[in-house]
Structures are given as structure tokens and as C-alpha cells.
Length: 216
Image 1 (cartoon, rainbow, N blue to C red):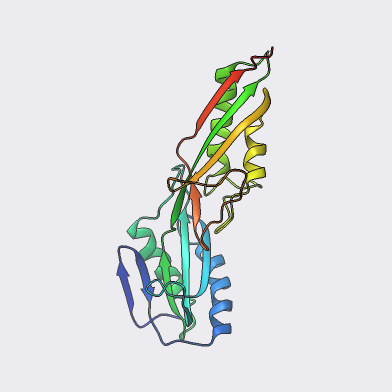
Image 2 (cartoon, rainbow, N blue to C red):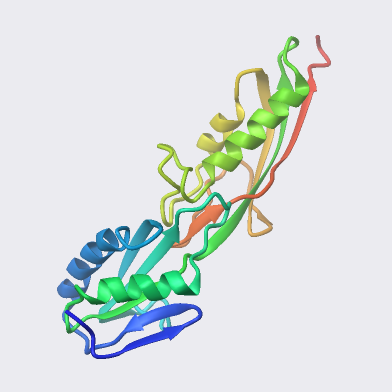
């Protein structure tokens, strides 16, 4: 159904009607997220039922916020204003009249890993360093990262053991230190790092030091 009004702002798109029941918001959210990936260049979408952009942390019945991520090679894919308009118009055709719908760009948290590793005696230090860096960049990518390569999960925690495993690439004898930072804040050693609900991670660089064992 078509909305009677559609309002656009640089940070969000909204098609406004009256609130509906909580269950309607949840059902509409699941449907809207699937439908959003059919609109234009959208690669991923995440619905947050009962979530209003202006009232974070407060459940608002009848409201659905849909986060859209464009198909892009950029480490931090961000939809243009035109894409937000197009997705809003597309979803508005199927929107339940009593649902207030917002379409927004993703919120990101930046991940940086600092690690020290010891390489096998026959390994090339530069190759090992490059492999680790590229592995981590891919692992934390919003569209190609995560455990299955389909994109980092929205709100997915960073598990220390899994990061450690991605550093232990072929050619590494042992990993001596791993420090994970999110938005410039270092996590405590050997601890998992929570990510806010509906938020994605990205990375642009990592600090990897590779050396040979002094015992060799």
C-alpha cells in the first residue's frame, strides 16, 4: 500500500502512519528486511522492530527501522541519500498502513587488531604479515566477513578466540600477543568484545609484527 506521506532526511527516510501492535511491528520488520534487499543496490538489510531512531533504547509499538547496506567494495559501505529514498519508496508500496517505517544507513564501529607473531623458520616474514592483515580485513568486512563469509553479523560480538585463530595463518609458529581495539578503546586481554545491537564492524588497517624465533 502507498503511504500518504513520505519524509526524507539525510540520516533516515520515513513513511509515517499511526502506531500498530507490537506483533505487527515484528512481522512487518521481518518482511521489510527481506524486501529491502530487492531494492536497487542493497546487499544486506536488517530490521529493528519497535525501534525509533529518535528514541534509542525505547520500544515504540508500530515502528520498524530498516538498516540497509549497499553492495560495495568499500570497507565501510554506506548508502547514498538517493538509495535511502529509493528503498523507502519501494518498501512503502508493501507497508502496512498502521506501521511507521524508517530506512537508515548502518552504524559502524571500527576494529583494529595489534598482534605479535613468530613465523616458521622457512616462512617469508612479509608474506606472513600481508596474509594476516588481509585475513583480518576480510574477517571484519560488513559484506564479506564473519565466520561464513556472508558479512559481519549485525550486533555480532568479537570473540577473542576466533580472532586469534584468524591470525594463526600458515607460516605462523606461534601467536605471542593479540590486542583488540574498538573505536580506539583497547579491550582487556583475552576477552570478547560486545558490539551494540544492530551495529556493524569494519576495519581499514591492522598492526601486525612478524619475527623469527630467537631460539632457532
